[in-house]
Length: 312
Ligand code: ACO
Figure (cartoon, rainbow, N blue to C red):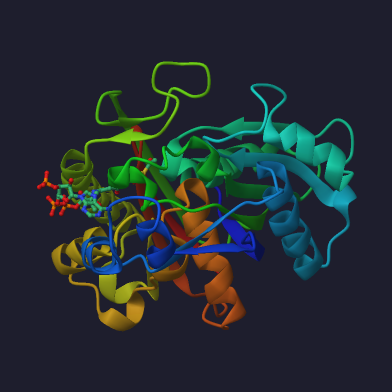
């Protein structure tokens, strides 16, 4: 596998903030239950925006920060399970809206919450044979349109948002990506509009157990393949699904508090967008210093999982 540079990042968070107290007026829940079980204090839902609007904003910010011309982007991947259209993909919609050149490779990936990590690994694999130097990888979700707002088991957990990253081939940088999936439909999913199960359904306890076991396992596999230990890693970025899942992984892997970045408090679970949103916040705070090693790990419906080691 070739190395990649994380050139820049961007994010988009829709303006409609929904607090736990707001939700307690809609379903039988309360702030204490939600914060103690998940860590989530608020999330954002789209008002007028569509998925592609979020992806557009995150991508535009990343392109601007990178200071590159759009003509230099040869690959566009959007990870999402909540596209605006069955077809064309969010990527193709975005290609038009962003004015990216005709002839580039543009497609969506659906690996649920592991989607951004799948996107990074696929981009790293494809970027080698590309004549243009940059790839744009985005996680973008409008989950609010797939939530049953009468189901307290699920509606309190998710939020909308997008995160984007521009990457470039660089063989001097370490990159390891390990992906997997299990083939499980019953524990977590969403059949979509017009079906018997149009909204997100979930067996929370099953998902919790799967998440802790598999994130821990894939993190160890990535470290082993990179010939590194947790001591060599500057930051661990977990998919933001539940603070208790992240804390369990922290305990199993013995990750020092200062190496863990958690922002689920403000956004809830934004699925494929959660990891790139974290990366963009860290970037904004100046935490992603040159040569910093970042271990990103996630899991999602499918069940899918992924672990990626990035060197900034
Ligand atoms: N407010 C109040 N009570 C609630 C709520 C709520 N929002 N939701 C559920 N409850 C109740 C249940 O009805 C149940 O009540 P009962 O015991 O009377 O039947 C009780 O709370 C369940 O409580 P716990 O067993 O303590 O719940 P648990 O600790 O398992 O936490 C949770 C539930 C937060 C969902 C947890 O299991 C979890 O986070 N699982 C993982 C979820 C996740 O990561 N999903 C990722 C989806 S990613 C994707 O790919 C789309």
